[in-house]
Image 1 (cartoon, rainbow, N blue to C red):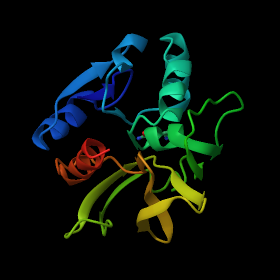
Image 2 (cartoon, rainbow, N blue to C red):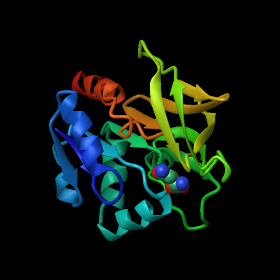
Image 3 (cartoon, rainbow, N blue to C red):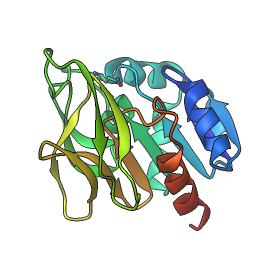
Image 4 (cartoon, helix red, strand yellow):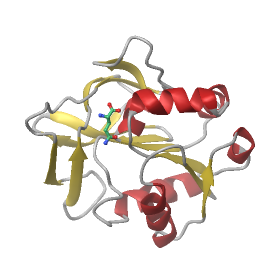
Amino acid sequence: MIGVLALQGDVAEHSRLIRQAGGEVCPVRRPRELAGLAGLIIPGGESTTIGKLLVAFDLYDELRGAIKEGLPVLGTCAGLIMLADTIVGGTEDQRTLGGIDMVARRNAFGRQVDSFEADLAVRGLDDPFRAVFIRAPWVERVGSGVEVLAEYEGHPVAVRQGSLWATSFHPELAGDPRIHAAFLSATAVQ
Ligand code: GLN
């Protein structure tokens, strides 16, 4: 059973792709809904808002604890920012869950190129993945334990550290379940 954090973002699309990849899925809004999950997806949205909502829904400490204990998580776009140990370009009071030893820069691609799509080579996938970037972060620095799965113009945009996965782009928007499937199968064998 994979949870999808349902405070903001493309909850329905992420849920559909997990089902398509053969998994079961449920929305997560309350601390008790974290219990027994095999993994969690943190959708995109606005990372500052997600941080505040996590606190308001009493999920912040619970989720940090679950991540420390090894809960597999796939964070996309703002979800990548939430999983970064360090954020640049954030607000003063911005909260991150952390877990991945990386520096994420918010809105890194700048205003001119607010949103764009690109065909990316992603490690482990045979064919390019159509990646949709929306006011996306990039990864500015990774620690030695972090595997870079994809880059765009020299910047890491998909990474993995152990059971934590993160993409700068929105894998749910192209309707391609391969990244969800990879997360699901890595999660299932843990
Ligand atoms: N720009 C957003 C942030 O900083 C992320 C955008 C997104 O998730 N599409 O949180």
